[in-house]
Length: 621
Image (cartoon, rainbow, N blue to C red; front, side, top):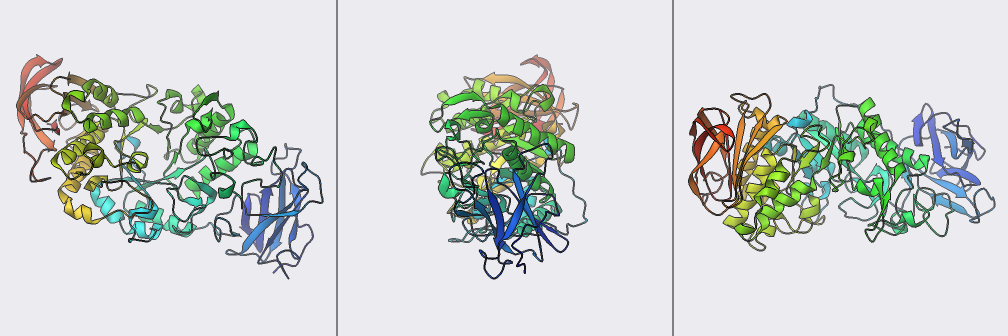
């Protein structure tokens, strides 16, 4: 225990609480403070009377303001509780004599609660020596999940340890990447995760830092990558969600705004609150967010990051959704994160949820872009959902579907987008089977049209993603208070088998659908009257590579529909979403076909295929 209340020099670099030989170095950023101390259960006789003075410190020698404070405290070990104590009289920077403000550490890796004390954490972990190789982007299939509801008992909050119990299921399903919705500490007992309070800490309800590392290791052992969802566009929301930590951290702000970590003018407003947008103009705030990204990629060995609402970083958008233009410092942050990712762990992936279909988001930083590897494709999502949700066949727009399937970002390849029909953003309103027929989500129409959407997701170019429970027809409204009903996986085991087969075909498990991993697509047939489209996918081309996908978006059945093929000969029906093994009331329309020489639909050969209603058939040689 330390009883030293005098200034102690720093002995280690890094922010927050950094364990070193014989103790711990504490460091914080408080440019407006007159004095700073660290206090904890290691200071005696009380936290207040034994608090340790921190000295002004500059991590960056070029910064003459010395905005950092640090102290090395001997004898401090993992598990110790602490807080920073900051003095500022409230009338402006650098004036001594004001009240003492007790604040949590913005960099803390754990805490007793979101409003409690910070905890010293040992970040090391004895990782398994078993090698793991992340799948290539063109082979990736993502399963988005929420830790609190993915594998939880009714009335309880799921944990990372609980989620490990379903990894075998995901491995059998065939997905090879998990996207974990935000697990950073939030200020409510239950949350979707988009109200971050302590960005470097894991929410207590989900487990500890070690539990996250164990989860990642367990996923890797099953060949599954882990992508973490992070929130850098806002904190909180509001002072209630940041009061113990980020809000007015060093006790001073302009006009009652949020202080050094946040904008202190109209730029503070965003769609999630009045005063909770990070101040990207401060290099220390950009450093804070960049450091958080690197924490996930290095300390937790994440295989990627999905950044929430990137448009609210690269632009200034107020809480009335008014766009006030580009934010250059926001662009700088995004480029910094992606550049550091590429230089340190280039095999990992960064995904932007921008939803503005902006090519610059996925352009390289050297060309002036943000440098993301991929972005969520809202045009694809909207077109596919509109096509399957429309009540009448006449309202299904095959031209919109074709444009969405063939879309390409940045002209740099077809895998710079994540394609999906459902994510948490849609599921928390109403899940797709209920969108199709609310109150009758298990109906033939809901089953046929929701699986039609899934088949387009898995056969279109891009990185396909499904939301948890989608594969067993989860319906209603997804809530962060309601655990996923796993009994439905048994009730709709045939639908689960359909998703499994689609994923296997997408990943070319049987070496006869390589084209689904390839960059090439030719949408050669769009029949908006019959509501049929057909497209050709390929990598190098040839038997086992070329894939023909035919989709019927109508209630009509076509026993014999002529389409084009790239070569003559026998084409095998590798997948038919109308197969009765999936559901007993499906029609089973579909068969192998022989293509003959003869131009049709700008293809050199043609053959007849069978198409069931609201069905997709996939052919290869």
